Image (cartoon, rainbow, N blue to C red; front, side, top):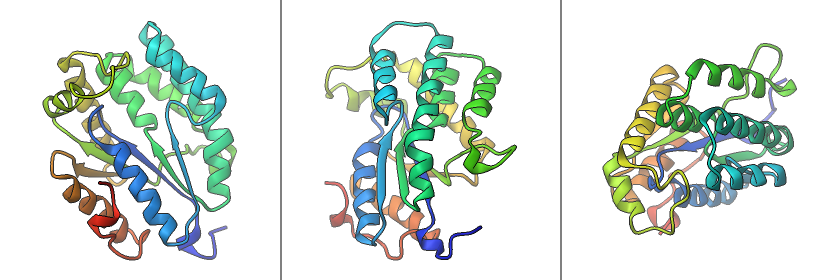
Length: 230
């Protein structure tokens, strides 16, 4: 049965982009914007979000493994995250802001690693079929915000960042394939994706981001740039 107040129904929003795209800073600003309008926000990430999934994240970022093992661990972490964090928060009518979800798996393991997309699709169907979405349906984000950034720009940003993890340390060509993987996912499901041009000044990225949510009726007013990320 629909929630009596559409503004208060649970919302599941994922944020995607190659390493260096700058999405994490904007997610925090958007969480504040939703809270400022009276919404309860669950801010989470993948891989991770639960004690078990965080342990699997540490393995994924630091231990060498083949692409199938990588994919199985990612989806194992996702299932635990869905059942213990995302689905309960949505049932409570919260806004779930998730730094990466399944599109990242298709981009990184599928595009970057060149792993079999059909196998990833099977794992997606197994893991994202939850009781809350009903038989034959999959839990997907209501909106996926894609921070689209040229891989060359991302590489320049990462050069000045902290010590890279196992993915951030990959060569530029890997990220070109990851970017192509994201583009393919967006082309396959365009109504779910909002593309943000992430190679602009930060306040312009913020403006694009918040206007996306205003147009959908999920934020009631534009949030000034000085209220967003610095």
